Image 1 (tube, rainbow, N blue to C red):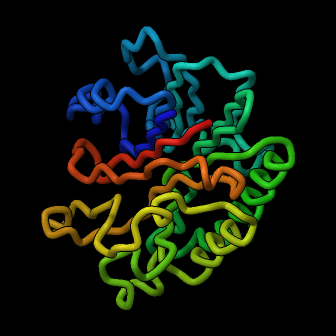
Image 2 (cartoon, helix red, strand yellow):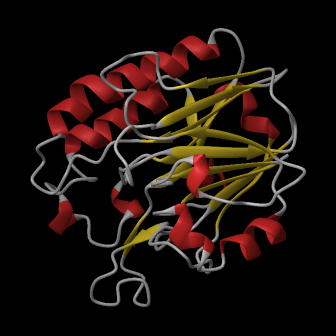
Length: 251
């Protein structure tokens, strides 16, 4: 199966910037989207062979997730089942015969780190608990914008960003906890090289200069490690400040 994840930074805007060209070319079995900034009534996407699952934020023009899948899942679940987290449309879970697929748009800690405590002590704790509970039943694949560069190799300027949102020790520890629970960062199974990023600031020509961060991931249960075939970052695909990431997995 080919699976793709992309933070589109507004699905309506991205549709006007070549989204469908990539969507049709990549021909994924499952295509996950974060930061839709829309609800289904605002978007017309003609994909007759895909099933759509939306989780939109209560706040208009904010956050939101979406999954297209060729195979109809057994079940779909929006959110973590925890009220304080679930108004922002950040999680969709699809249950298939052999695995769970979760797409997630992790909350940003904000430039002034005003949301770091929530992120560290509430969201990260509850998301880890959620995927661990799923894994007791079936292997888990989760993907999305996790809003953290895990290690120094995952951003261009680690030293100058140590207390910036997305690279604080608290956020990185949150990813460590995912790894300690047995979830594998699929890209690093295939590529240990620096300068591989999935997000670039719109400022100062950062993308052209490849001054970026790798904050978009596919992670899988350890039991699926040998099923992985490829993991890629599609850095040449424009349309958002993020680029798509993907895996091919035998499952």
